[in-house]
Length: 187
Image 1: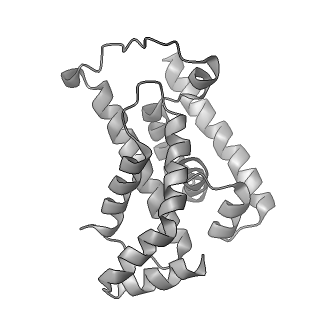
Image 2: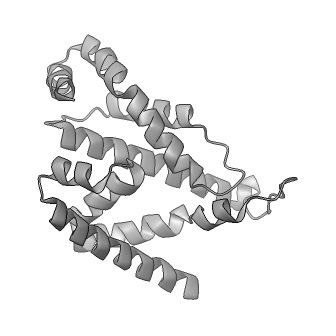
């Protein structure tokens, strides 16, 4: 993974070949993360893992290219790009103009397990924005954990905090987000 930092440095210096090499190094991992995130989506979701990775990649190295100083910033940017894409997709789907008020009926009933893992991304996005205003560090942890699919040990390493601190921050952030989303549902 140390190659990532080298490629990021070259990319920030304007080396266009570094972007290709960086993609080769991180593509498989980004695709696994995208698959995991999309598996949690509600049935009928049309976005595919490959499309999610490619869209996130285009945002990361396209016109709005960031200056990533380290793996931490890069994976944070990946998580943020995937989060924004999923939220935009959820908003498009929910818009009345596109028939978002119509309920899709599946011919095969979804399993209870899949229904239990589906999530209202719009509610999560609002709750995450509130957490960001209150504690940006914990919000970044959530993005890396939830959207990038990193383990708590990987998040701790990426953020430069101890695993115990990452565990405490994750517990707090989950409770905060649950409270915010549950409060929204009660409205």
